[in-house]
Image 1 (cartoon, one colour):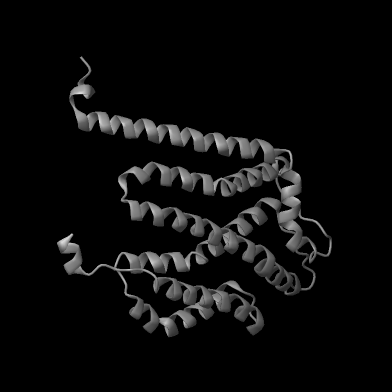
Image 2 (cartoon, helix red, strand yellow):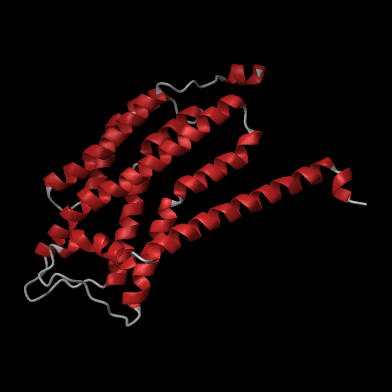
Length: 250
């Protein structure tokens, strides 16, 4: 006799595990298809990634200190790009998995929330590539001591740029984090408004740490971070937070 048939909780748990496995398989299939398609363009992808630095290098090229790097590094980039492109599908699978356990209004809110999170993450990556990279690499190419030629290794360059893009992708999630804090009643919108001056100082500190040491570059980085904080305050205005009394009545 099937024990799970006589135990509704065990049958429900088994159903969730099967569904989770199915959605993981779908996600891996999409990742594999994207990677298979991008493998052919792996070298072109790396050249595109290196463009912000190449135009500032006197010799016009990077170097490979390991004999297998010219082969493996572009494929590593192709896999990372595939992973980033698959993020919306991963988020959809996550939403579809947890949606049955949510209330109707929660289902209507979470999907736009995940979509906006993905778009902001991509916007942060684009900001890093098109704005931060040119400023940073132009500065680094100019400050090299006399007699020193800047010749980065292709593997180190990939690791450095990917980390920087992920950092800015995370920074652009500031409005989502703020909305989440307000919606869960961990922080009130009024408190976020009071913290505005600290946020501005923090934005310029981040600009000082990540941008070249000139006021113009630091301001270009700090102002968008500050504006993201303002967007978070604006969006939190539309969040309805239940009071403790309302929660107890529910």
